[in-house]
Length: 516
Ligand code: AHR
Image (cartoon, rainbow, N blue to C red; front, top):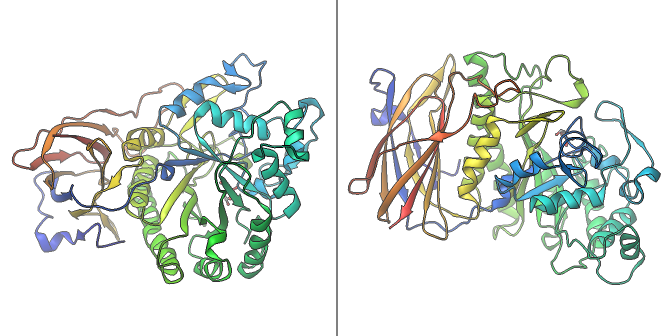
């Protein structure tokens, strides 16, 4: 926890634990005239892999489908994601990336070879959705592509040619091949991942071996287009600090834009149901989620030692909850439901990524559609928006806004042996001067009477939205699409710079204060 930015003070010390019926008290100071760092919109990025029904069925239905589509890509999913201002999309994996040979996914569809998706269900991949289809999807979404290359089973030559195929404007063997396949203009893709989880499914390498490989790949992935490539080194799993330290030591910093990190909120010894859980599992999940703060801080501490000027970014390019698959579904497809608990995980994680936006320049939730902590679930022609979707839609107010320093006094939410900060807050100011505050009360039973002290700005009109539900495991289903959805929230108004408002139990609130 970066204590200079958010001050969470033990509730007891401030007498905040006194409850009024089912309510507690908290205090928040927002310094609206301070702040140096911008919350990159890319923190609100996505990850979509050739896994289960993410690509096939989730995005791609084919031109001949009865599901309404544009060049084979379903329109309902595109328009839902556009409403969140999706800033980037990582593809094709994941573990799949280090088995993927991009040339199999270009050219006439009926002539593309097939392969077996060994990681995810052993199903046959027909390569119908390849480079052109992915980049068409990104153009339809208005989002930046983030392509992950194959280091585990590929070659430097293969990745280097992929960059040339996509980005070179002039005459070259790869650019000419792209034209033969129907695309004249280059796409100018900036974000390139050099492998994925290369300590595991991406080749079971040591950190030292990977660092050597990274340098080779980085040299031959050339800048062809208008902009410089932003190359991202495959990073550590969770708390593997040795991996991060080795990469920071062995890779010249000018050769990489960032180092990635993967952190899943899960108990690998027994994940548990996505929907059938009680308060003990709820508290445990949020505890595991909040542990990411410690993990991130430790990786950043290492980066700070080798790179005090913060030239290398931390890219959390896989994060989210990982529950048991829905009963009766393919265990290799990682299809799980999504409840208010998942929305809490999303909101807490995003608030923390905002807080560390000095170093975190991108994050990608795993995965956008039909896999793990999805924003969207589909069933043939039907589509639903999960509670996690609503968090991304509500939190877009922070995109590219300046992070404001806050001081928060919060009571604790306690259940059995666990005690966690009840409130989490993030505040930002956009270029119009509008101040946005995302406030989370994780306590499923108690509301919080929050006093907000706005300093350094005159307060204008306050608007608000809230996401909550009757139960911690409430979720949307194809039968009931709107069990969990945001509604308007009346927070009251500022009097002499102070706003007293009540944040209901188990809720996520976004307030906006117009500039005066
Ligand atoms: O997101 C599912 C998988 O989790 C990814 O393919 C892999 O990178 C990670 O282990």
